[in-house]
Image 1 (spheres, rainbow, N blue to C red):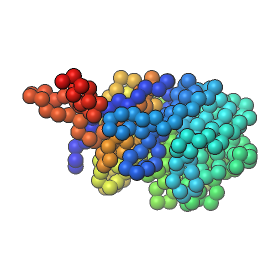
Image 2: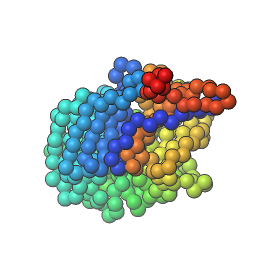
Image 3: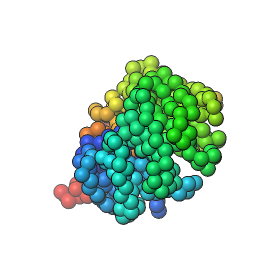
Image 4: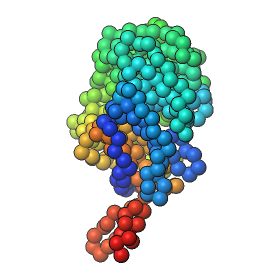
Length: 344
């Protein structure tokens, strides 16, 4: 099994970021762009070329950005950027055109959001609203705080199946404005992701991360859930704030990327029984609020892109950025080389 050797590269610093407020856009050409929103209300999209950060667009809102999610046509490429701030949801094209501004008129600010085609799922702390073509069609009030929301892929399911992560250690599976059933998990869930980015073969497998550091997977059945696996937090690592599926080990199988509130970034690969095995860990000095895999700075080199609470956007890249200089290793990039050459 190949040993992961990743090098940290800092890209920029935004304002303070909430969990899941950074996304990597689909590949365009040979590399991908990054979109990040911060508590100052600024959304910015940028790419990296020859070691230089290049801005694509920048937009401001009156309220801080609580979430940045990707949307698009059902079964198509998710290339549109959706943000929520206060009661408002905005959507941008990949070039920065603000093609949607929608006031949800909810009774509390939007804290989490998911987009599936023309369906918009938004949650405050206790209220869930489902909009279709910007018309309110479903509404649920929960007993405990909602921390995240997603829905199973509609191409494999009959209609929309929203799933709410709630602080009382429960995932609530909805059908229209009704509670279909509750699935208990071993800790307070704070983040949800579809397994394999598509929910697996049947489109009903959901990953969750908890505030006490556990990771698990549930299969959302029609009437009852099935627990597939759970990774306990034996090392007492920090709470899980973000998850992603990305093949950083380049073995043709998606790996599980994990970001924690103690600054740990982890990679898990799957064994022959499809259960996760720890492969790599990197520690930074602050809470990791978002984690995404992509090809950002150099074609053919995969990266784990992270955002931190203080707004740093950095990557752990598979590209070797070290040059030998006698017995020591000096990290270099295109910008550093240009500066050194100017000094000669």
